[in-house]
Each structure stands twice: as structure tokens, then as C-alpha cells.
Image 1 (cartoon, helix red, strand yellow):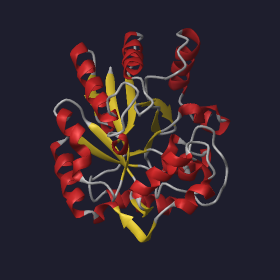
Image 2 (image 1 turned 90 degrees about the vertical axis):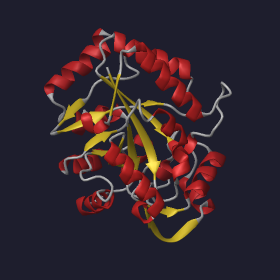
Image 3 (image 1 turned 60 degrees about the vertical axis):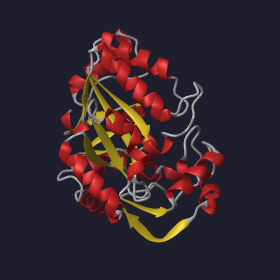
Amino acid sequence: MKIVFRDDDLNYDFNINDFNYYEQIKDIIKVSFFCVPKIDFKWPNYLEVCESFGPGSNPTSIRKKMKWYEDSRYLHENIILMKYLLKNVKLGWMSICLHGSKHYQTVSDVILERNFSFGAEYLLSSFEKRDILHDIKSLEKFDSKISWFAPPQNLISPLNLKKVASLGLNISCDLTILKNLQVFVRVKLRSIVKLFYWKVVKRIRFYYPFVVEYADIKLLGVLRLNSETDINDLFNQICYLEKMGGEVIAINTHLSAFNIVTKNGKTVGENLVELVMRLKRTNKFEFVSVNEL
């Protein structure tokens, strides 16, 4: 079974020291970095504010606590980081993908239970194709072709999904979007059969370990690796899905959380390294870039 590591939120405010844990395992795995092309706020402050409020908070409350830049800061304007990314994309263990636009929305005060509506721009805002293309071209400074997109908070409206798909971008997101009839009617028949088989025959509903074919693109769900993840449970879930005949799993994590200490006393980054080594020892998994699906 194939395993994709999807790391979100890479942006102007990161530095090369943030990649220390990946440097330990870069000869084993490939990492698909889903990048925020431009930011208007200081990212470390954003993380602190979100942590203080917690999921389900009002976007206006978060917005008032933010520290904002005077102008948008583009990922490619961080020259030292840009050189590091270019080198590792060329080496082949790193790939670049699109993660939203600015990672925040200002049009709605909708509250999302167990999620941050402040960042759910592709769910609560409407994007024009020309704006999405502008963000794609910004990231093409790092990789010649941007083929995958992930919406912030893993949430996207049916209209925005249709627009992103029309530009030929594959999408990794929360697959509850398939419950929307506008989306479901465009899923290819063979993928509908697979969904039915896993949900009804195998009775596995926590994750669908395959690519869903939607219109002319691919949809891919995610399993999460964060500060709340029990690493043993995640390992067992992955092994179980492989045993049941799974094809591919995407593990969603975040560089910015790697130094957070978890319930087992280890950091998120340490748990990532341990998970990779345990999976490698089974000899049952192939670690691939999302672009190889």
C-alpha cells in the first residue's frame, strides 16, 4: 500500500530549522508540502491565538488578536527558505502543492464545531479562477507543475471544488464533501462502487484508502497526525487498512506542530519519526509523493 505524507501550511514565516525531523527520515519518505502562497499575518502569532481560543471559536475574536503585516508576504520572498526548497524538490524527496490562498476569511462569523472557521477560506469565501491561477503561478517558482490542492481546515464548498477541479488540480480534503449531491453526481461510477464496497461490505467508514475519481481529477482523504493523535492507534489503523486491501493513505501533519509535546511525552515530530520507522520495518508500504498517485 502507498503512503503519502501531506504537510500543510508552509509559508513565508518558516525557516530551514523547522525541517529537522524530516531531515532524519528524508532517505525513507517523500513529503508533499501544501503551501500557503502568501500570508497577511504573522504565522507564529496566528498559532498562539488559535491555541488560546481553541476550535469552535468566533472568527472575529481571532481576527482582533492577530498581528498583521502591512503587505502580503509571499513564500518565494523568503530567499533562504526558497533555496532550501528548490534544492530538495530537485533531489526528489519534497514536492510543492497549493494550500488555499491566505489561509483566512473575512466574510463570515459562522462557527464550526471542532474546527477553525477563521481559516476556512475555501468553505466560506468564493474564489475566482484567475485568483486561484495567480496562487498556482506563485508556487511554480518552486516546482514546475502544481498538481494538487488542499483547502485550509480540509473544508471546501461545492462551488470552489468545481472551480479548482476545472483548473486540473487534484484535491485532498475531508471527504464528507461527497455527501453533497452536486459533488457526488460527478464521481466516476467505479469510485462509487469502491465507496459502497468499503462502507457497506467491509463496514469501514473512518477512512477510504483509495483515490476517488471526481470528474477529471482525483480526490484524496486524510488521516491526521497531530498533538492529539495516539501514535499506536494510527499505526494500527494503517496496518488494518493495508490488511483489508487498501491502496493509498494520506497522513496529514504540520511542521508547525512538531515541537508540541503529546500525551505520550514525545513531540509530534518524534512521533512522526517513530511512525515512519515502524511502518518501514513492516516492509508492506511504499512511501510516495502525492504527485505519484
